[in-house]
Length: 103
Image 1 (cartoon, rainbow, N blue to C red):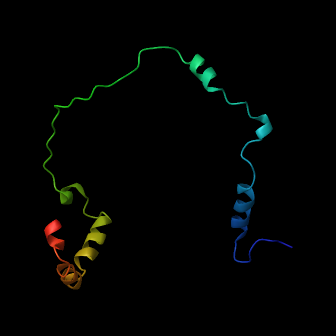
Image 2 (cartoon, helix red, strand yellow):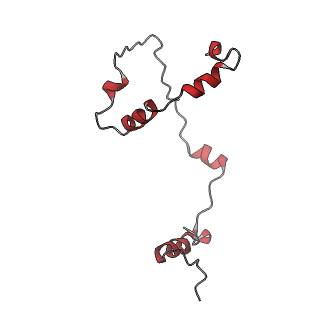
């Protein structure tokens, strides 16, 4: 008798049984090198460093509306958010002392 749950499909049962198998045979794997062995195998050389250019300036004049395609999915989310009635939430925020002054 199969011990898999009744609501699982044959492909799910197959995936579960495959996932329980080890990817590699641990006896056939090579021993990892020690840190000393790794340090010896690395060639001594000059470190490669990139110096940041701090005086580089780039100005972009673009709006998010221009950067998104007309059929981008985020426009659906934005339309849903704009349709929300937040007046009761804003009234509740006004009751908190100094809430709007902080932000």
